[in-house]
Length: 275
Image (cartoon, rainbow, N blue to C red; front, side, top):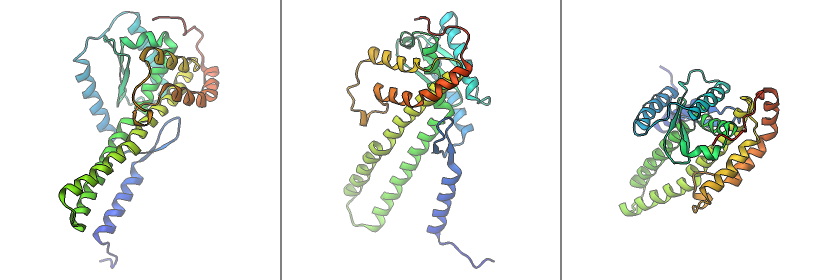
Protein backbone atom coordinates (compact mmCIF):
# COMPACT_ATOMS: atom_id res chain seq x y z
CA UNK A 1 0.00 0.00 0.00
CA UNK A 2 1.28 3.46 -0.88
CA UNK A 3 2.35 5.57 2.13
CA UNK A 4 0.96 8.68 0.37
CA UNK A 5 -2.48 9.63 1.65
CA UNK A 6 -4.78 12.56 0.97
CA UNK A 7 -6.93 14.11 3.61
CA UNK A 8 -10.58 14.59 2.53
CA UNK A 9 -10.22 18.34 1.93
CA UNK A 10 -7.14 17.95 -0.30
CA UNK A 11 -8.79 15.13 -2.22
CA UNK A 12 -11.90 17.19 -2.82
CA UNK A 13 -9.79 20.13 -4.02
CA UNK A 14 -7.83 17.96 -6.47
CA UNK A 15 -11.08 16.44 -7.75
CA UNK A 16 -12.53 19.90 -8.29
CA UNK A 17 -9.37 21.05 -10.12
CA UNK A 18 -9.45 17.94 -12.32
CA UNK A 19 -13.07 18.63 -13.21
CA UNK A 20 -12.16 22.23 -14.05
CA UNK A 21 -9.40 21.13 -16.44
CA UNK A 22 -11.63 18.54 -18.11
CA UNK A 23 -14.48 21.05 -18.45
CA UNK A 24 -12.42 23.70 -20.26
CA UNK A 25 -13.17 23.95 -23.99
CA UNK A 26 -12.64 26.53 -26.73
CA UNK A 27 -15.26 28.59 -28.53
CA UNK A 28 -15.09 28.54 -32.36
CA UNK A 29 -14.01 31.76 -34.12
CA UNK A 30 -13.16 33.71 -30.93
CA UNK A 31 -11.00 30.99 -29.36
CA UNK A 32 -12.20 31.92 -25.88
CA UNK A 33 -11.72 29.23 -23.24
CA UNK A 34 -14.94 28.31 -21.50
CA UNK A 35 -16.05 26.21 -18.56
CA UNK A 36 -18.56 23.49 -19.50
CA UNK A 37 -19.61 20.82 -17.06
CA UNK A 38 -22.60 19.51 -19.02
CA UNK A 39 -22.01 16.73 -21.60
CA UNK A 40 -22.93 17.96 -25.08
CA UNK A 41 -25.02 14.87 -25.88
CA UNK A 42 -27.21 15.67 -22.88
CA UNK A 43 -27.68 19.28 -24.01
CA UNK A 44 -28.54 18.18 -27.56
CA UNK A 45 -31.16 15.82 -26.17
CA UNK A 46 -32.62 18.62 -24.06
CA UNK A 47 -32.62 20.93 -27.09
CA UNK A 48 -34.50 18.43 -29.23
CA UNK A 49 -37.11 17.84 -26.54
CA UNK A 50 -37.63 21.55 -25.90
CA UNK A 51 -37.85 22.26 -29.64
CA UNK A 52 -40.74 19.84 -30.13
CA UNK A 53 -42.49 21.19 -27.04
CA UNK A 54 -42.11 24.83 -28.12
CA UNK A 55 -43.22 24.29 -31.72
CA UNK A 56 -46.29 22.36 -30.58
CA UNK A 57 -47.60 25.57 -29.00
CA UNK A 58 -47.35 27.65 -32.19
CA UNK A 59 -48.55 27.74 -35.77
CA UNK A 60 -45.78 27.19 -38.28
CA UNK A 61 -45.39 28.57 -41.78
CA UNK A 62 -44.17 25.56 -43.72
CA UNK A 63 -44.72 26.81 -47.28
CA UNK A 64 -44.12 29.95 -49.30
CA UNK A 65 -41.11 32.12 -50.16
CA UNK A 66 -40.44 33.23 -46.59
CA UNK A 67 -39.90 29.66 -45.43
CA UNK A 68 -37.87 28.86 -48.53
CA UNK A 69 -35.49 31.72 -47.75
CA UNK A 70 -35.21 30.56 -44.14
CA UNK A 71 -34.31 27.02 -45.20
CA UNK A 72 -31.80 28.25 -47.78
CA UNK A 73 -30.06 30.63 -45.38
CA UNK A 74 -30.11 28.10 -42.55
CA UNK A 75 -28.43 25.44 -44.66
CA UNK A 76 -25.72 27.83 -45.89
CA UNK A 77 -24.88 29.10 -42.40
CA UNK A 78 -24.96 25.70 -40.70
CA UNK A 79 -22.67 24.32 -43.42
CA UNK A 80 -19.90 26.81 -42.59
CA UNK A 81 -20.43 26.11 -38.86
CA UNK A 82 -19.00 22.63 -39.54
CA UNK A 83 -21.13 20.73 -37.04
CA UNK A 84 -22.43 17.83 -39.07
CA UNK A 85 -23.27 16.04 -35.83
CA UNK A 86 -26.03 18.59 -35.13
CA UNK A 87 -29.57 17.89 -36.32
CA UNK A 88 -30.04 21.29 -37.96
CA UNK A 89 -33.70 22.32 -38.21
CA UNK A 90 -35.22 25.70 -39.08
CA UNK A 91 -38.82 26.64 -38.32
CA UNK A 92 -40.75 29.79 -39.22
CA UNK A 93 -43.22 30.56 -36.44
CA UNK A 94 -46.32 32.66 -37.15
CA UNK A 95 -46.03 35.24 -34.40
CA UNK A 96 -45.52 39.02 -34.29
CA UNK A 97 -42.68 38.71 -31.78
CA UNK A 98 -39.44 40.30 -33.01
CA UNK A 99 -37.15 37.44 -32.10
CA UNK A 100 -35.25 34.31 -33.17
CA UNK A 101 -33.57 31.60 -31.13
CA UNK A 102 -31.50 28.44 -31.32
CA UNK A 103 -31.51 25.51 -28.90
CA UNK A 104 -28.53 23.20 -28.29
CA UNK A 105 -28.05 20.80 -31.17
CA UNK A 106 -29.06 23.24 -33.92
CA UNK A 107 -32.82 23.60 -33.40
CA UNK A 108 -33.70 27.07 -34.72
CA UNK A 109 -36.86 29.15 -34.61
CA UNK A 110 -37.56 32.46 -36.38
CA UNK A 111 -40.75 34.44 -35.69
CA UNK A 112 -42.44 36.08 -38.67
CA UNK A 113 -42.46 39.30 -36.64
CA UNK A 114 -38.69 39.68 -37.10
CA UNK A 115 -38.80 39.53 -40.91
CA UNK A 116 -39.37 43.30 -41.52
CA UNK A 117 -36.34 44.00 -39.32
CA UNK A 118 -34.23 41.56 -41.33
CA UNK A 119 -35.48 43.14 -44.57
CA UNK A 120 -33.63 40.76 -46.91
CA UNK A 121 -31.73 37.50 -47.16
CA UNK A 122 -28.43 39.02 -46.02
CA UNK A 123 -30.12 40.40 -42.90
CA UNK A 124 -31.52 36.97 -42.14
CA UNK A 125 -28.05 35.48 -42.67
CA UNK A 126 -26.60 37.60 -39.87
CA UNK A 127 -29.29 36.71 -37.35
CA UNK A 128 -29.07 33.07 -38.45
CA UNK A 129 -25.30 33.21 -37.93
CA UNK A 130 -25.83 34.77 -34.51
CA UNK A 131 -28.22 32.01 -33.44
CA UNK A 132 -26.05 29.26 -34.91
CA UNK A 133 -23.15 30.86 -33.03
CA UNK A 134 -24.97 30.38 -29.73
CA UNK A 135 -25.25 26.68 -30.54
CA UNK A 136 -21.69 26.04 -31.74
CA UNK A 137 -20.26 28.07 -28.85
CA UNK A 138 -22.34 25.96 -26.46
CA UNK A 139 -23.55 29.01 -24.60
CA UNK A 140 -26.54 27.18 -23.13
CA UNK A 141 -24.31 24.55 -21.57
CA UNK A 142 -21.91 27.17 -20.27
CA UNK A 143 -24.71 29.15 -18.62
CA UNK A 144 -26.06 26.02 -16.97
CA UNK A 145 -22.56 25.14 -15.75
CA UNK A 146 -22.24 28.62 -14.22
CA UNK A 147 -25.54 28.29 -12.39
CA UNK A 148 -24.59 24.87 -11.05
CA UNK A 149 -21.24 26.21 -9.84
CA UNK A 150 -22.87 29.21 -8.15
CA UNK A 151 -25.46 26.97 -6.50
CA UNK A 152 -22.73 24.69 -5.18
CA UNK A 153 -20.85 27.71 -3.83
CA UNK A 154 -23.94 28.98 -2.02
CA UNK A 155 -24.53 25.60 -0.38
CA UNK A 156 -20.87 25.42 0.67
CA UNK A 157 -20.91 28.93 2.13
CA UNK A 158 -24.02 28.20 4.17
CA UNK A 159 -22.42 25.01 5.47
CA UNK A 160 -19.36 26.98 6.61
CA UNK A 161 -21.50 29.60 8.30
CA UNK A 162 -23.53 26.85 9.94
CA UNK A 163 -20.51 25.04 11.35
CA UNK A 164 -18.00 27.80 12.06
CA UNK A 165 -20.10 30.75 13.28
CA UNK A 166 -22.72 31.51 15.88
CA UNK A 167 -24.84 33.61 13.55
CA UNK A 168 -28.58 33.29 13.67
CA UNK A 169 -30.34 31.54 10.77
CA UNK A 170 -31.76 34.85 9.49
CA UNK A 171 -28.27 36.38 9.41
CA UNK A 172 -26.80 33.43 7.52
CA UNK A 173 -29.60 33.54 4.96
CA UNK A 174 -29.06 37.29 4.54
CA UNK A 175 -25.32 36.83 3.90
CA UNK A 176 -25.84 34.04 1.36
CA UNK A 177 -28.62 36.01 -0.34
CA UNK A 178 -26.45 39.14 -0.61
CA UNK A 179 -23.63 37.11 -2.15
CA UNK A 180 -26.12 35.54 -4.54
CA UNK A 181 -27.28 38.96 -5.75
CA UNK A 182 -23.68 40.13 -6.16
CA UNK A 183 -22.87 37.00 -8.16
CA UNK A 184 -25.94 37.47 -10.37
CA UNK A 185 -25.05 41.09 -11.20
CA UNK A 186 -21.29 40.67 -11.27
CA UNK A 187 -20.86 37.32 -12.99
CA UNK A 188 -23.95 35.73 -14.49
CA UNK A 189 -25.50 38.75 -16.22
CA UNK A 190 -22.20 39.96 -17.70
CA UNK A 191 -21.59 36.45 -18.97
CA UNK A 192 -24.95 36.58 -20.71
CA UNK A 193 -24.08 39.92 -22.31
CA UNK A 194 -20.72 38.46 -23.28
CA UNK A 195 -22.46 35.50 -24.90
CA UNK A 196 -24.57 37.86 -26.99
CA UNK A 197 -21.53 39.84 -28.11
CA UNK A 198 -19.68 36.62 -28.88
CA UNK A 199 -22.63 35.33 -30.91
CA UNK A 200 -22.56 38.61 -32.87
CA UNK A 201 -18.87 38.08 -33.63
CA UNK A 202 -19.40 34.48 -34.69
CA UNK A 203 -22.51 35.45 -36.64
CA UNK A 204 -20.79 38.10 -38.75
CA UNK A 205 -17.96 35.66 -39.55
CA UNK A 206 -20.35 32.85 -40.43
CA UNK A 207 -22.45 35.05 -42.73
CA UNK A 208 -19.31 36.26 -44.51
CA UNK A 209 -18.00 32.73 -45.05
CA UNK A 210 -21.43 31.74 -46.35
CA UNK A 211 -21.16 34.50 -48.98
CA UNK A 212 -23.30 37.27 -47.45
CA UNK A 213 -22.02 40.90 -47.08
CA UNK A 214 -21.01 41.31 -43.42
CA UNK A 215 -21.63 45.08 -43.41
CA UNK A 216 -25.35 44.25 -43.38
CA UNK A 217 -24.96 43.03 -39.78
CA UNK A 218 -24.78 46.61 -38.47
CA UNK A 219 -27.79 47.59 -40.56
CA UNK A 220 -29.81 44.86 -38.84
CA UNK A 221 -29.09 46.40 -35.44
CA UNK A 222 -30.01 49.87 -36.74
CA UNK A 223 -33.39 48.55 -37.84
CA UNK A 224 -33.74 46.60 -34.59
CA UNK A 225 -33.23 49.81 -32.61
CA UNK A 226 -35.91 51.57 -34.67
CA UNK A 227 -38.41 48.73 -34.34
CA UNK A 228 -37.96 47.89 -30.66
CA UNK A 229 -37.21 51.31 -29.17
CA UNK A 230 -34.81 52.03 -26.34
CA UNK A 231 -34.66 49.62 -23.44
CA UNK A 232 -35.65 51.05 -20.05
CA UNK A 233 -33.46 48.47 -18.27
CA UNK A 234 -29.95 49.73 -17.36
CA UNK A 235 -27.32 48.04 -19.50
CA UNK A 236 -25.43 46.67 -16.48
CA UNK A 237 -28.58 44.81 -15.38
CA UNK A 238 -29.57 43.69 -18.85
CA UNK A 239 -28.86 40.26 -20.30
CA UNK A 240 -28.26 41.84 -23.71
CA UNK A 241 -25.82 44.55 -24.82
CA UNK A 242 -27.41 47.68 -26.27
CA UNK A 243 -27.43 48.19 -30.03
CA UNK A 244 -24.44 50.55 -30.07
CA UNK A 245 -22.32 48.05 -28.13
CA UNK A 246 -23.33 45.35 -30.59
CA UNK A 247 -22.23 47.48 -33.54
CA UNK A 248 -18.86 48.09 -31.88
CA UNK A 249 -18.39 44.32 -31.64
CA UNK A 250 -19.22 43.95 -35.32
CA UNK A 251 -16.80 46.78 -36.23
CA UNK A 252 -14.03 44.88 -34.45
CA UNK A 253 -14.60 41.74 -36.52
CA UNK A 254 -15.60 43.41 -39.80
CA UNK A 255 -12.10 43.56 -41.39
CA UNK A 256 -11.65 39.78 -40.98
CA UNK A 257 -15.22 39.13 -42.06
CA UNK A 258 -14.80 41.24 -45.19
CA UNK A 259 -11.83 39.13 -46.26
CA UNK A 260 -13.88 35.97 -45.87
CA UNK A 261 -16.71 37.53 -47.82
CA UNK A 262 -14.44 38.46 -50.73
CA UNK A 263 -13.34 34.83 -51.00
CA UNK A 264 -16.84 33.37 -50.77
CA UNK A 265 -19.37 35.97 -51.94
CA UNK A 266 -22.36 34.72 -53.85
CA UNK A 267 -22.89 35.55 -57.51
CA UNK A 268 -26.39 36.87 -56.81
CA UNK A 269 -27.82 39.83 -54.95
CA UNK A 270 -28.89 39.11 -51.37
CA UNK A 271 -29.84 42.63 -50.23
CA UNK A 272 -32.96 43.11 -52.34
CA UNK A 273 -35.93 43.89 -50.10
CA UNK A 274 -38.14 40.89 -49.31
CA UNK A 275 -40.01 42.11 -46.24
